[in-house]
Length: 96
Image (cartoon, rainbow, N blue to C red; front, side, top):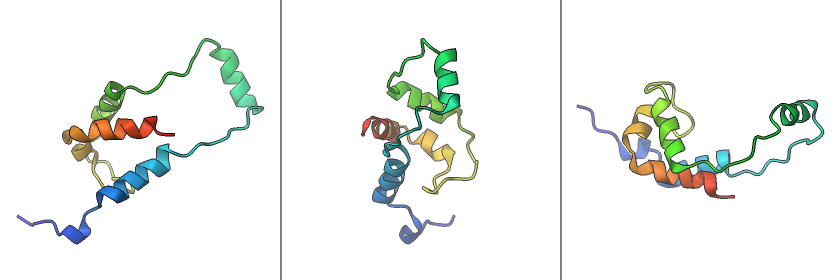
Protein backbone atom coordinates (compact mmCIF):
# COMPACT_ATOMS: atom_id res chain seq x y z
CA UNK A 1 0.00 0.00 0.00
CA UNK A 2 1.28 3.40 -0.96
CA UNK A 3 1.71 5.88 1.85
CA UNK A 4 0.68 9.46 1.30
CA UNK A 5 3.43 12.02 1.36
CA UNK A 6 2.82 14.93 3.73
CA UNK A 7 3.93 17.48 1.14
CA UNK A 8 1.07 16.41 -1.16
CA UNK A 9 -1.63 16.92 1.46
CA UNK A 10 -3.83 19.97 1.68
CA UNK A 11 -3.29 21.81 4.95
CA UNK A 12 -6.04 22.77 7.36
CA UNK A 13 -5.39 26.45 6.63
CA UNK A 14 -5.70 25.91 2.87
CA UNK A 15 -9.05 24.16 3.29
CA UNK A 16 -10.35 26.84 5.69
CA UNK A 17 -9.26 29.62 3.32
CA UNK A 18 -10.90 27.88 0.38
CA UNK A 19 -14.26 27.55 2.14
CA UNK A 20 -14.08 31.07 3.55
CA UNK A 21 -13.51 32.35 0.02
CA UNK A 22 -16.53 30.42 -1.26
CA UNK A 23 -19.10 31.14 1.47
CA UNK A 24 -17.60 34.12 3.26
CA UNK A 25 -17.86 36.78 0.59
CA UNK A 26 -20.67 39.30 0.79
CA UNK A 27 -22.06 39.93 -2.64
CA UNK A 28 -24.25 42.88 -3.56
CA UNK A 29 -26.85 41.92 -6.12
CA UNK A 30 -28.71 44.18 -8.50
CA UNK A 31 -32.04 44.42 -6.66
CA UNK A 32 -33.62 45.90 -9.79
CA UNK A 33 -32.86 42.84 -11.93
CA UNK A 34 -35.97 41.47 -13.61
CA UNK A 35 -35.41 37.88 -12.47
CA UNK A 36 -35.10 38.91 -8.81
CA UNK A 37 -38.36 40.83 -8.90
CA UNK A 38 -39.98 37.93 -10.73
CA UNK A 39 -38.83 35.43 -8.10
CA UNK A 40 -39.92 37.69 -5.24
CA UNK A 41 -43.35 37.98 -6.82
CA UNK A 42 -43.64 34.21 -7.37
CA UNK A 43 -42.33 33.35 -3.92
CA UNK A 44 -43.69 36.20 -1.83
CA UNK A 45 -43.86 34.14 1.37
CA UNK A 46 -40.34 32.74 1.08
CA UNK A 47 -38.19 33.93 3.96
CA UNK A 48 -34.51 33.52 4.67
CA UNK A 49 -33.64 30.94 7.27
CA UNK A 50 -30.12 30.05 8.28
CA UNK A 51 -28.68 26.72 7.18
CA UNK A 52 -28.76 24.17 9.98
CA UNK A 53 -25.97 21.79 10.87
CA UNK A 54 -28.31 18.91 10.03
CA UNK A 55 -28.93 20.33 6.53
CA UNK A 56 -25.18 20.52 5.88
CA UNK A 57 -24.80 16.88 6.90
CA UNK A 58 -27.74 15.87 4.68
CA UNK A 59 -26.32 17.76 1.71
CA UNK A 60 -22.91 16.14 2.18
CA UNK A 61 -24.47 12.67 2.36
CA UNK A 62 -26.30 13.27 -0.94
CA UNK A 63 -23.12 14.12 -2.87
CA UNK A 64 -21.67 11.49 -5.20
CA UNK A 65 -18.61 9.82 -3.67
CA UNK A 66 -16.00 9.96 -6.39
CA UNK A 67 -16.89 13.04 -8.40
CA UNK A 68 -13.87 15.14 -9.31
CA UNK A 69 -12.78 17.01 -6.17
CA UNK A 70 -12.85 20.76 -6.01
CA UNK A 71 -9.99 23.09 -5.19
CA UNK A 72 -9.61 21.47 -1.77
CA UNK A 73 -8.72 18.21 -3.59
CA UNK A 74 -10.88 16.21 -1.17
CA UNK A 75 -13.19 13.57 -2.62
CA UNK A 76 -16.80 13.70 -1.43
CA UNK A 77 -16.38 10.21 0.02
CA UNK A 78 -14.02 11.60 2.64
CA UNK A 79 -16.23 14.59 3.42
CA UNK A 80 -19.02 12.10 4.12
CA UNK A 81 -16.87 9.80 6.25
CA UNK A 82 -15.15 12.52 8.27
CA UNK A 83 -18.32 13.52 10.10
CA UNK A 84 -16.35 15.54 12.66
CA UNK A 85 -15.76 18.10 9.88
CA UNK A 86 -19.49 18.64 9.29
CA UNK A 87 -19.79 21.02 12.25
CA UNK A 88 -16.82 23.07 11.02
CA UNK A 89 -18.20 23.25 7.47
CA UNK A 90 -21.58 24.35 8.88
CA UNK A 91 -19.89 27.06 10.96
CA UNK A 92 -18.39 28.49 7.76
CA UNK A 93 -21.95 29.23 6.62
CA UNK A 94 -22.55 31.23 9.81
CA UNK A 95 -19.54 33.53 9.50
CA UNK A 96 -20.02 36.85 7.79
